[in-house]
Image (cartoon, rainbow, N blue to C red; front, side, top):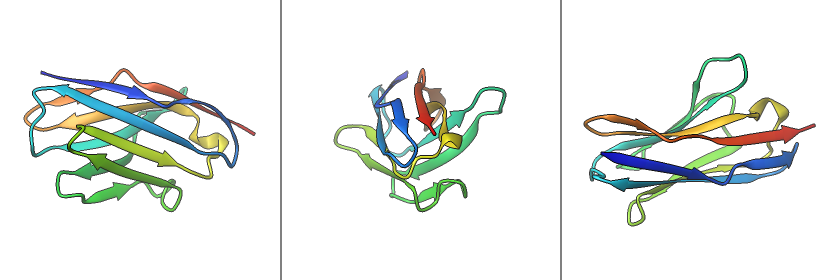
Length: 114
């Protein structure tokens, strides 16, 4: 079992920045993929950014150049640095961990005011 705990969400004005963190505890595999997903009201959950154990990253087109995903394997933590935030980024942001199984965090709310 793996548990995920997100933090760092909040309310920010458009153009501002937030940094999300997700700590994985439990039976964390050395090789895994971690990522951030988001779900806005009335919309489907979508991938924002992912990073594998080798450091390879992928981003949704809508966040390229504004968001940066990174990881600290010593702390079993993945980060999402979000800059130049837009009202359209408002959503609940979820952390996901994939190794032999898939685990999701509880989510953290990000609200961007115009």
